Length: 246
Image (cartoon, rainbow, N blue to C red; front, side, top):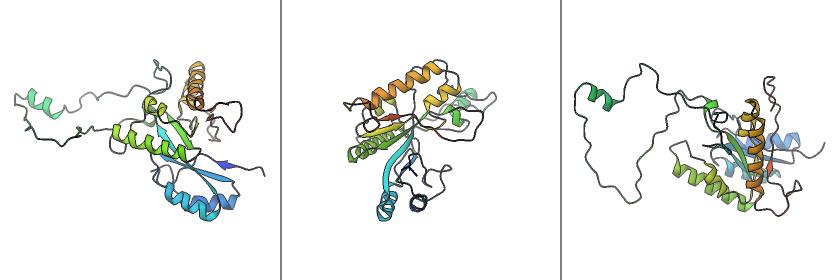
């Protein structure tokens, strides 16, 4: 059996998308004879310490990764193929509280000005009710090639959380471009940008997105003609869905 390492795997730290603890996954990987295993939880590095510790004890090569959800497309998306337009407020929905008070002829309740500590920023609420999975941003899998790549992942996650809201870090392509050192990228599952464009019939857009990712992650490597030095790969998965050709 040729060496094989699973590079897209979620632990129970990925809510509703993973059920196994990191040490259980390591034990199963050793049982199957895998040469390595990557843990790529959603939007965070929550289980990497337990995973790396268990892998070291079992003699398995650990690969630290993450699956992010980008807020924008890699290339222009005027047709909304990658990120469909979100639904507006429903007809007949209750108006906002201040609007309701104005409609009733009542004054809006002013809030007193309060002194804020230096560095304070107003909270931004992210309401995902009524927003389907297909309307969220495209996925992208990032793997740390070495210690430099792990530091890039940590910076990326920290800055995305500072720019986002609770449980919804804001991963943008501008932020991603500043933190690619030591990283390998996979195109993602069927919710990746390339897969979404292919499922929507946008083959030219899928090619343009793949080329952009290849340039972005190959910029720090002198050679890009070998698998050992390449930093962007198209991900393939056996998803058992006859309607998709990803």
